[in-house]
Length: 206
Image 1 (cartoon, rainbow, N blue to C red):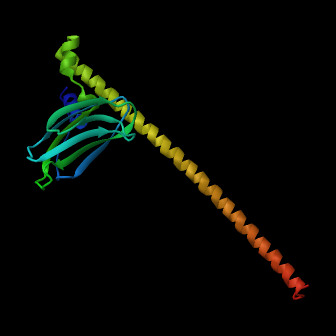
Image 2: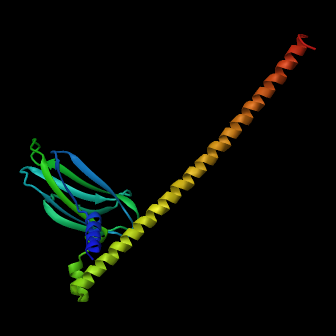
Image 3: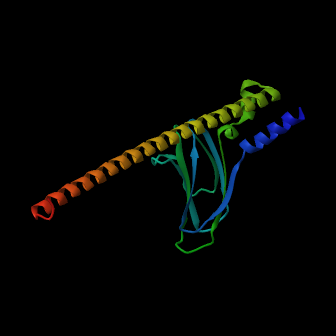
């Protein structure tokens, strides 16, 4: 029982990692963070910016197609959430501007992002479905297991795709090598026949 509990605890620590970041954005500069997320995954985020007189920081969350999933002008503190429609690379950008036009210190930004199982609110789920604590934990482990299986399935699909790409590339290289050898053989044969006719025309050989 202790080993099983320890395994679940370590697995939970490994999976339920919180992407908490803290960085600085210089005045009149833009800093972006990117992350790949699977399809149909809930993504939540919470941000906090320290006070910076004379500075205005805009926040925008977009995908590779330019769709704006969340935006906030003069962001200081807030939360955002969205569900991905397809596997994509998502970008979170903080752009700081000086209102007065003068220079100022860099602005500290704290960003806490969660996605997948870690983004779900199981407390709200327990209240809505009137679940007991043990049932909530079982639901959490069930979602966690499904997330792990989906990740393994995705990695397997990517591995198969890469293997197919490598096999196609190998076939292309082999065909190109054979074609190159045939071209060289044909060129060498043509040169021999041409020189033979030339030397015969000059009566250098019979």
